[in-house]
Image (cartoon, rainbow, N blue to C red; front, side, top):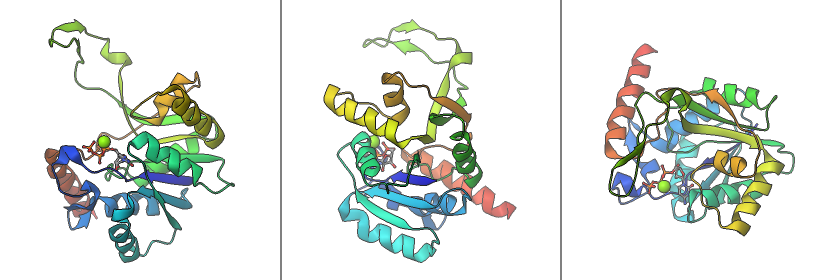
Length: 229
Ligand code: CTP
Ligand code: MG
């Protein structure tokens, strides 16, 4: 399986002066933890890192230090995650029939989750890891007045990995450019094109490191795991 890591963000909500993926947690960068999970996943054979060229030197040093056995290719990203993924798709080798996309910021995903996502693509053309929501979700208007309370049993929180047939996802991205669609994950593009997307049970610990409190939680979970080894 070929895997793309969107890593071209700036980490605005983290309030950091550089890409949050370079911030340390439990002795390694967020980016390093993500790469270690990908390296440990039996089904992943090729890694495409989509980043901003000014981060490539730091990224290369991290890859070298981890002494990964899998090929790693660096691909210049875009202004939005959506653009970055499209750049990554265009850079995939021709042999790649399917792709997993996994955010660099989800450094707690396990190798087992990545392998389960790969396996699911044997039977579906589009999948995402997701977990059922624990909170009751409110739909509100611009005055913060509640408009609706959807039935929680139908609500799932999207994670990555997200996986697709490459030809179909490329078509969806091309259509999005033509029609000006802006979305926050690739499943949304598949959905907009009328294509089916299946949920694979994700992991409660698979959070996206987004704000400073997520660094504290990630450090705790990683520390807990190393204590079990
Ligand atoms: N990403 C990307 N290209 C962009 C923006 C984001 O590849 N132009 C990546 C990020 O590096 C991250 C993933 O998409 O691994 C999820 O994005 P997010 O958590 O929003 O990260 P940032 O965009 O860096 O953070 P923020 O939105 O707070 O600035
Ligand atoms: Mg962002």
